[in-house]
Image: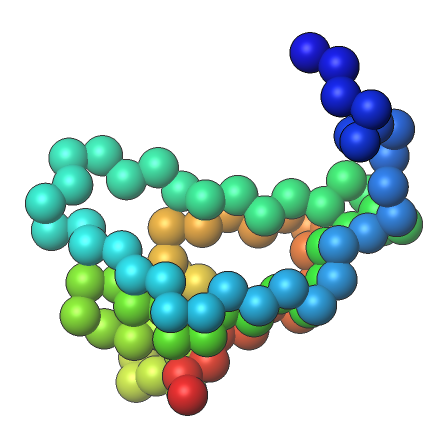
Length: 93
């Protein structure tokens, strides 16, 4: 498929993206496939991604949430982030 608006050439980067008020109900799901945030390389990376009020089941996920100290917030989210992604935050407002 060819579209004049889009190109297969590499871009520069993706920066400062906010996702607000997303929710996921895992209780009724048989399979949960993780979302992917993937940068291409160090020059074409993804940075500054914020999830605001992300709710999984009935729990709001944030960097300040109560959790065992050896857990990372991302351990609660079905999400894969590669090494070319920087500064991902989970906040509650």
